[in-house]
Image (tube, rainbow, N blue to C red):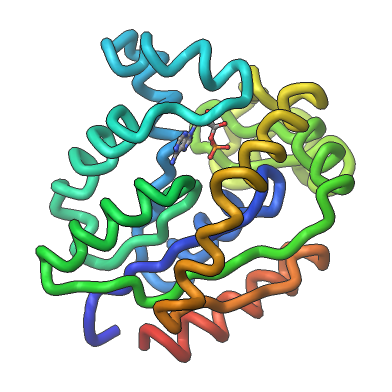
Length: 222
Ligand code: AMP
């Protein structure tokens, strides 16, 4: 890649943003930047920001822009992001998108592509409610769609402890879907206006979506 890419993955909970971001890391050496992961780490570490975010996340609502922007800016200051980034779960509001545009402009950069992962809401409840991850390496699994090859052991690292997110239950997923449609879906038009929007049908297999994303990244960022 000639210049550091800034990719944005847009889509409701369960669309596959995290799964595909991890694959793009593998395929292109980009760095996944998930504000959800950063917030969960802040909650686990018991920081002040984590304390303020915890109940909001458990209710399936959006954490305030000031908290999210503070943790994102801190992460974007780390040297590894110079390779290029995949923003997973950020921006989620018009305010966050404007702040990102400003941050990038100040660094002489802009969004390379914003990919909208297009899915049916109803299928998302089942996708999210069945998912779990390896506690050691974060590899994602699903009760129905992707069990570890050897039961109880992570395919990637062999870890035997798995975890489920507190907000991955049917009731909270519906809240999160509502938040997505009310506050995040309008960003599709924002990036369409910038001429960087790409739409991908994300109802297919993980492999098919990976291939579609790889083709886009190769085209826009190589
Ligand atoms: P995720 O892991 O992306 O599904 O995010 C989990 C939860 O973290 C969301 O339901 C929100 O409560 C919070 N969150 C993550 N990213 C953001 C963001 N960019 N803006 C506001 N809240 C966020």
